[in-house]
Amino acid sequence: MQTIEQVNDMDNPFQMITDTFHPDYRVNLSIQGLDGSIMLTLSNECGVVAKRLISAAQRNDPQRLRKLIESVQFGIAIERGDSAIKILAAMTDGATLKKTPVPANGLWPQSQATVNAGV
Image 1 (tube, rainbow, N blue to C red):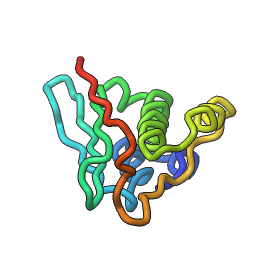
Image 2 (cartoon, rainbow, N blue to C red):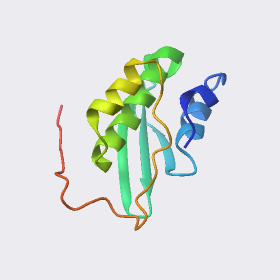
Image 3 (cartoon, rainbow, N blue to C red):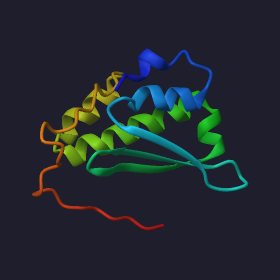
């Protein structure tokens, strides 16, 4: 996965998203509604790693899109067990999260709690 700086010069938001997360994850972008929203689904051989609904406004605003990508990277890192404080420090210092590696065995630790959120 590339850092946002490596792909921030791209005009195409779909390419920016794909280049940020591929080849570490399969990237699926699907249309969700007539309002232009899309669903981002990141998966690996073990299943879905992250899902995020992206509004047309987020997709069309490079700054908002960068924040959304960082948010997805943050969520993946937390699920992986990385330190939230270190990740937030990196984000607030203007740095972006580095490559999000998949565990060597391809499985996330079983000790991590699963979080489900509803809207």
